[in-house]
Amino acid sequence: MAKPVASITGVLMDGKYSIELWKPDNSAVEAELHRDNQFDVASTLYLIACTQYPGRLVLLRNTARTLARSDRPDTMPEAAWPAFRGFFENW
Image 1 (cartoon, rainbow, N blue to C red):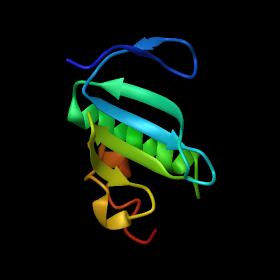
Image 2 (cartoon, rainbow, N blue to C red):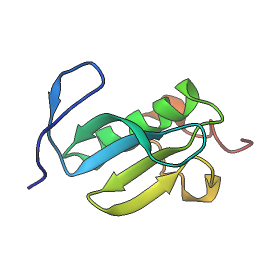
Image 3 (tube, helix red, strand yellow):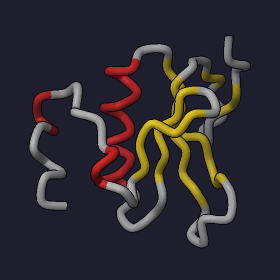
Image 4 (cartoon, rainbow, N blue to C red):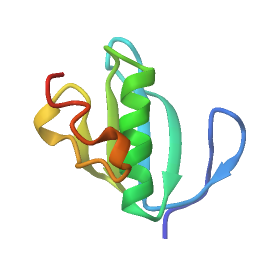
């Protein structure tokens, strides 16, 4: 089980899926935005983070494995939330 971590708001989070925001120079993780055990929740929040931080590297990870990167649209997960379906097709 993943170790609980504090988010940028100080709230303790736990879960095997994480959403990371990387520094502008992509040298290191700036913040872990969210953790969740449900892929649908994590993937939807990942897509939201990509819209909140355009031009920044955002990763969706399962522990140490990278599932999606904002700089590689071909890795984008299908949105769990229907409102996002097709949103990134021309991105």
